[in-house]
Length: 148
Image (cartoon, rainbow, N blue to C red; front, side):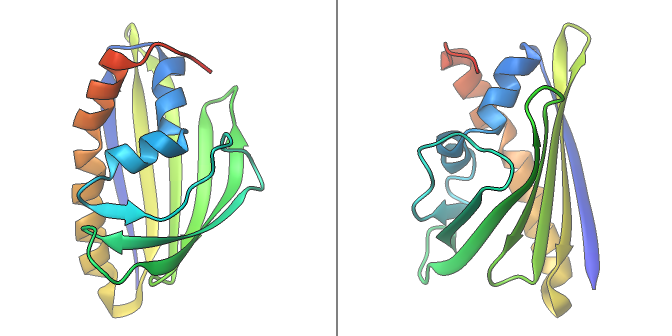
């Protein structure tokens, strides 16, 4: 069984600034806080071909399960990223695109999920998690001074 979850958020900020946040490992940790807790994540920038072996726990509760994130596409110029992730789920493919729009930008997330009989539950949780990322990103953008 498979499911696709898509979500878009509009930002009144420069596309490059939003892209920089969306592709920063430390920012990932912050935007999923309370929903998921990652083990070690790289200090280096995200790049194509990168494979990260870490752990993840839902809601920060034990057990922390092995988790693998493979960056299969990364185009900094086009502001496009695709990852293939696996662990306790069979497959979680995440695509992120940032596109200029009306003086700001739109960030689009797409998740393609395969988790067997758990797929509808994982998709429900993923929809909530994607929606909850927006407010922390807005807060970080108000504090963010750097750019890529």
